[in-house]
Length: 328
Ligand code: NDP
Image (spheres, rainbow, N blue to C red):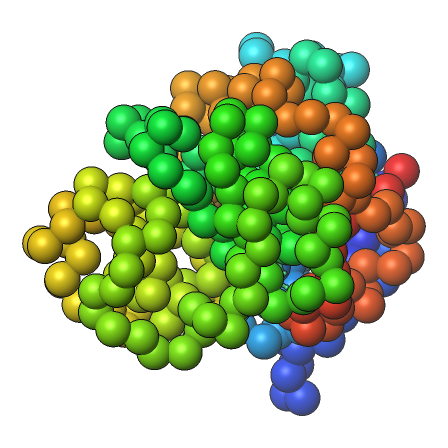
């Protein structure tokens, strides 16, 4: 019987439990490509899954971990052959399909993208779901017709994973970036990534007016709730906010005022089921446009055995930038 090491979430009478154990390869779920996982990442959703704080896991037992980089071991998909380096984000992996915190994963070939040229597997996971989502947000703002000449761009949750990559990408694209953070101690870190201004997140996290002074043309919001409502209220005419997160909350206590009086747009970002062409475009742009020195500056690498403590850490806001888990 072939087994591999995995983090496994089980559900019993006492609730959810997380163990690091041997997993039987025959219990892997349906898929046409088997991958030897070499690296994974840590995302906010992984924190929710690992701790059980929110019901993101919808199958038990579950191997958590929503993204991985690895090497194809076996493939029935003609697009992939053994030895190919691949990357996976989304598609319910780590939620409904056995996930990334494991030495093996079996997935649909259509979920994978080839490792982008110019990136190592570790760098791809330093970007991970969070960084890939930041690129989707930038692409959405650009598709809306916004350019750096329009005015500043705000990034909320700036010290987090999505936020750190968004700051670096927007600054590289020429935007005047306002980084909103609750961690004043990370101001130098954020300036190093390219932020021109630092804004205390407390200014945005309490209820404000439905329309307020126009402060930015664009934004990437990882926070949601009152923060997103304030972002919209302070967006200049014909600007847009790309909304991807809910670190403050799932609600949106806003009004239609920014939309009907200023023509502000709210652009939704969903990284999970993005179709392949857009997925590949996002990854190839990340490989070209993300400064690898900045990526290194925002990345912490941890061993596979440490996964068990990471869930609480990310939900407590103790994690800066991105975390790579070395699996192999
Ligand atoms: P991180 O935990 O790395 O970043 C979140 C950041 O939000 C924190 O670092 C903190 O930044 C800020 N924050 C945390 N709690 C609060 C709060 N109560 N009020 C205001 N700000 C807060 O997570 P990720 O970057 O991985 O993900 C960010 C969000 O984006 C999550 O909600 C995640 O679920 C979502 N997401 C959505 C995706 C999609 O497809 N739509 C894909 C990927 C992520 P600081 O300390 O700087 O203030």
